[in-house]
Amino acid sequence: MSGIFGAISRKGDCGNTLLYGTDYHSHMGTQFGGIAVFGEGFHRQIHDISQSQFKSKFYEDCKRMKGDKGIGVISDSNEQPMFLNSGFGPFCIVTSGLVENADELACTLLEKGISFSEMCEGSVNITELIAKLITTGKDLIDGIEKMFEVIEGSCSLLVLTPGGVYAARDRRGYTPLIIGRKEDTWAITSETCAFPNNGFDVYKYLEPGEIVLVGEKGPVTKMPGREDMQICTFLWIYTGFPASSYEGINSEIVREKCGRALARHDKDIEVDVVAGIPDSGMGHALGYAQESGKPLRRPLVKYTPGYGRSYTPPSQETRDLVATMKLIPIKDVIEGNRIVICEDSIVRGTQLKNFTVRKLWNAGAKEVHARPACPPLMFPCRFCLSTRSIDELAARKAIRDIEGHDIEDVSEYVDHTTDKYARMIEWIRKDIDVTTLRYQTLEDMVEAVGLPEERLCTYCWTGRCPSAGKAPARETAASSIRTV
Image 1 (tube, rainbow, N blue to C red):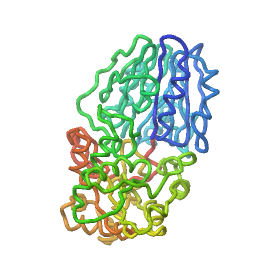
Image 2: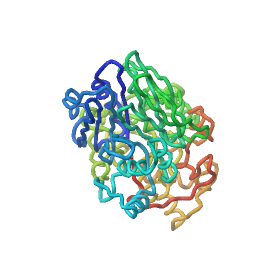
Image 3: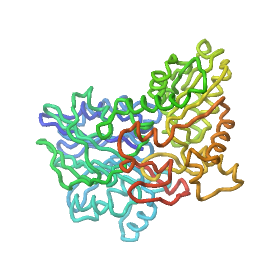
Image 4: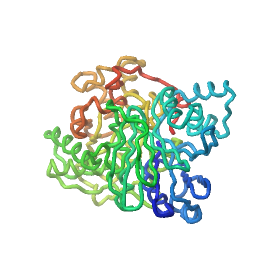
């Protein structure tokens, strides 16, 4: 994924706002950071941030790159921003989302004589692809609309021009964009946690498909939004920052509600300690402790200065290294205790088993009860997340072992009331080596968010998109699913 941010100042340089606003998206990616500013022309800078913090890389850049408007990005794969000098004028662009048919679209453009200058892991840079698609329009708005028509997946974006910053949210609203304001500056963000410490208040949540030009005098709608929304539910459960709100609903509050729901189904077990897997499991654990009345403690603590999220690095080797090193067990809290651990999700299961549960057993835990805050993941995300292959998912590995082969129809395993679902959960329980395993139900998760299910994307759990009926199971190779 990527986190994007834009700033437009009415009274001078936007550098500090752009630096710190973009930095509040550091939880969204670990590979590249980038900023672009318009002052006396365009100025653009990109750095590899895989081994360093965004602020340390860009602090000096933002002091010398003067301008009253700018955009920034933190990305998990593609180098951005991209600069193009198009038939309707020069612009810089940053993007967030996922494009499934990127290779197909790139081939189509190449056949038309359009070339690409940037590459990412042997394929075209997706942000450059989006920019080239936009330039096929008669103007910027027409180009964005044409891009929306041809991509499969999702793409939200910010486009920096001499006249202001264009913000466009993807047509189904899978990824959010929010406009903020303070006395002398406007901002656009994908994470509202970028607003409070920078002095902004939320002004507007962009609607799906809406395109807005934000200039010195504020936002002007260039293309109205749509009512049919399918925002990613996982934002509240895991990927979003606890201090961020989406559609006006705070992530931390949703996580506490998820934890409460998990505890209500646990009347049949006795535990001594409630724990959250840092960081994203902490809110769920708080809710569990509030509902159960059991003490919240920290048997595992994250070494924050050195390690970020383990799901964002592109290689499995790096993800495993981060998972190994970042969590430090406290034996004095663990030894002899029955512990329930709240986690945001179980994706592959390998990190939970090898780098979390094993540390608890080795430190003398008496029992370990795992409580993921969402249902079993069944499908790789098609719209904005980083699950790369259907074969990697813990639930799919369980189904394959139970059935003896891969199956297309997994509806009986999705339904938590069936015997097959119970067999799948028991397989995963044994595999990750916990005393008990109980997943959140889809109904409880949706209730915790508080939006109607038809306005949420639950594809990775159910395989269906609410407004489009049942979607096919896309058992696609990792190379053809590209994040932006």
